[in-house]
Structures are given as structure tokens and as C-alpha cells.
Image (cartoon, rainbow, N blue to C red):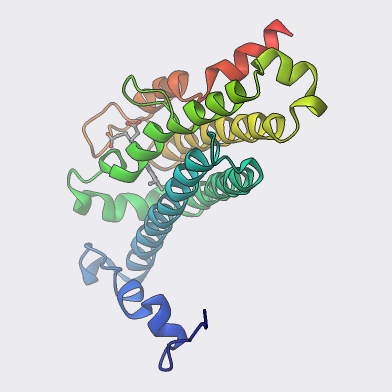
Length: 234
Ligand code: HEM
């Protein structure tokens, strides 16, 4: 098969920069001043970047789930996806820390214009929670796939952890899932911190108690509990 590049393809066209770079529309009025406009622009860009990374994260987690189970299992390829997912989550932890540069003064200046819009409405974040088995009753698809791959090799979690060399790539998958679990928890923890740093104990725009509500959620933000439990049994 011959590959043919699109002859008129440009950098801007390929990346749809026109749409992306024109998608930042601060809602605070001009008379709030340029600093407030810049702070809101920063707030928008950061949230948009989160949503783009969530999209990639969901893709990688879904692909890993497809690649793990037999008969067409390709564990090394699944591992590539899981390791990328882990690195994206790590990046998002750092991205959350960017909000240290949103002062309470500038945030409070545009916050009233946000009305009831809240991060709690992020559909993709809910999808990420589902993919990690943290929302609803369904087990994480990627964990179900991992279990199927272990079953095909007649391995238990204990054996995998007691003899990593024998388990090979499946041991590395287990540890990649632990990394993902850890990074996701970190992301939630840093979210609580930045919320407190910017709004203190004010209620959230979504109508919750704010920081207290977010801190409570940390209890149930640990994905793949089996991989944490097995450590105690070794
Ligand atoms: C200055 C930055 C931020 C502040 C002050 C903040 C604050 C809050 C607060 C107070 C809540 C509780 C719900 C409410 O009543 O509104 C919340 C929920 C949430 N926020 Fe943020 N947030 C910030 C940045 C982000 C970012 C960058 C994201 C990423 C998309 C995000 C995603 C979420 C999600 C998914 C929830 C729902 C959590 C849950 O119900 O489990 N937030 N946020």
C-alpha cells in the first residue's frame, strides 16, 4: 500500500488551530480590567487542556483494555498505553499545581460570572472515574481485562507479586495500574489543595460545601483496590 500525504495539509490545518485558538471566551466584562481578563483566560486554557488530556487518557485506557485479554492479547502494547496514561495523569497533577498562580483576588473577580458552572459537570472526568472503576458498580474494564490476561496464564495476583520474573509483562501491567491509581489519587488531592488555596471554605459554584466535599471524595478515589490489598497478603 502506498501512503500519500494530503498535498495541501498545513500545520494549522492539521491541528485545527483556528478552532482551538478561538475557543477562549472570558465571561467577565472588559471593565474588570486586563489582569482579570488574563486570569480568566488562564483559567479557561487550563481547564480546556485538562479536557483534551482526559480525551487522550480515555483512549489509552480503552485501548489497553482491548489489548490485554486473550486470544488476541498484546500485553507489551497494552503496557505502552498504560504507561502513557500514567504519564498523562502525572502531567495533570502538575497542571493542577498551575493554579497556585491564580490569586484569590483575581479568581474572586471573575468567579461570580461563572454562575453555577462547575468542574463537577465534566462528563469526561466522570468517564475517567468509570474507566478506573470509581463510579457506579461496574468494575474497571481495564482491570477486568487484566484479570482475564492473568487467568489465561493461570496466574493469581499473589503469584504475580511473589515471582515478578515469572509473571513478566503482567507484573509490569499490575504495577502500571498501581501507578495510575496513585497518580489519580494525587490529582484529586492536589485539586482539594488548590481549591482551598483559591476559595478557602467558600461553597463551590456547583452548590456543594466546596473543600469539605472534595476532601470527603478522596476516601473513595483509590482505583484498583485489589492491587493495594494484595500487598498486605504477601
Ligand atoms: C482554581 C481552580 C479550581 C477550583 C477552585 C475548583 C473548585 C472545585 C469545587 C469547590 C468543587 C466542588 C463542586 C462544586 O460545588 O462546584 C469542584 C469539583 C470538581 N472540579 Fe474543580 N476546581 C478547580 C479546578 C478544576 C480543574 C482544572 C478541573 C479539571 C477538569 C476540575 C474538575 C472538577 C471535578 C471533576 C469536580 C467534581 C468532583 C466530584 O464531584 O467528584 N476542577 N471543584
